[in-house]
Image (cartoon, rainbow, N blue to C red; front, side, top):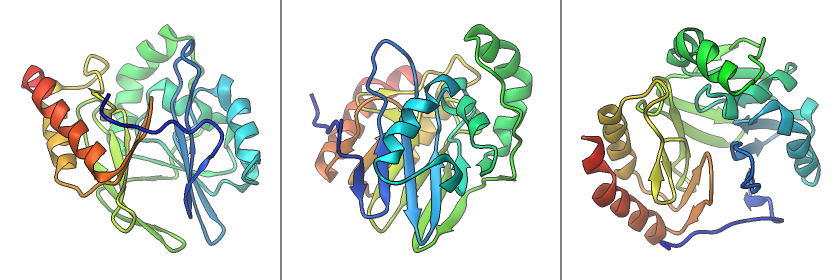
Length: 231
């Protein structure tokens, strides 16, 4: 084991960052994160709609409620990350524009139907491109990291060296590429992420990694064991 941290009860990771890991191995669902600063609450990847009540129950511990979420960001639009936006109709929604095309052409007729997921009726209020986003005092960078999906994005906070990776990188793993992705493009995206200084790696599934050395070793393992298979 490379070194990781599983938080079951403590949801506040940093001053303005909260984590809601999905810990039930029987069902597939995404980890959710909240960035909160000066009254702006940004929820990242709400997961499956059926599990939103579980998420809301955990959010209430930190005094977050559905109506207090300002913005929902989806790292990509696979059902296990996107379906739950249907609950947050009163919030703004942002994702990469490439995901909208993939949703229409591939995810909707295949992934959503196959998993019996409900296709959200909520549409994007704006698209996320590479660049900076500011939430209150928090400044985050949007990084377009295609490969798992055409419009996959990661979010990076240089001040606290936090990287939210969606399904691009996990603990000893990377996102699959057979759901509208591309292995070579995914490898290029991962190499971009390896250049960042990261102390907290927060993936879309599984355990988070805490500590610069743990993150570095994880990237080294991926580079040695997985990237050659993608190229």
